[in-house]
Image (cartoon, rainbow, N blue to C red; front, top):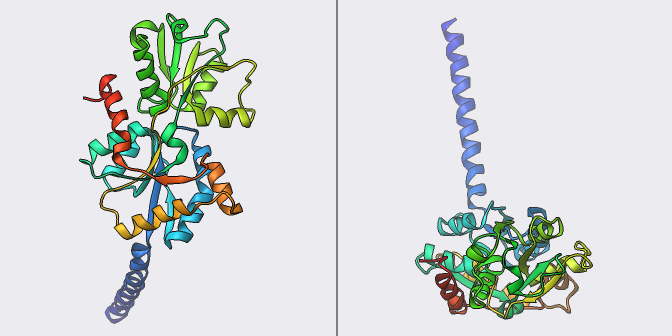
Length: 293
């Protein structure tokens, strides 16, 4: 009986050893698999972000030889923090979130690529109220920004309002934050806010897709241009990989059908190199508006 028990114990030990051996061969393959972790500020609905990224993700896999994983993130601050703590490698940031990421990473976050359109980006002020025709008409009204950390949905519109001697915190009846550009339009259309502001690219996309009734919701003002979005990498990413990524974006050509789909979804005519200095004006505006110390 004791001998039989010993045999069973020995068999159990051998089985465990065999399992551990198999595991030791399989684990390194999974651990060594190169994965590029990509995310974006949630300035639109999560399903829309995934739809926009899918073809670009496949393209980057082909160009880098790595698996590309899109990691949904709950809010703007979480994207910045995840980049700083090396949980993400490549992120789509707005100008203001890049400035926040630069500060959070002690200047190591590196903007490598932007759309050509991002060098002259604008925001659209929208309303469904026929009486609102200028910034001055917003006094005493309810107003919707996007996310508090949004460049085009909050910081720069606030900056231009302040330049026009309109202080949202004092002059508006109520200020709401919708969380995303498409949500701001929904707020205005539903009468939850008398007016709101969102980025020009999302507004144009909503109009083209007929997801906004332009007989009801209209643009009454457009901001002056400013630098906005970019693709930023964490500072310690392999320089060879950073070059592959930059080259991949720069190679995108609207004459190539595969590339054309990617560019269309990214609302880009083409991509161009970016640099941190492009966003110095955003940082100054944030400090002037009291959004950065």
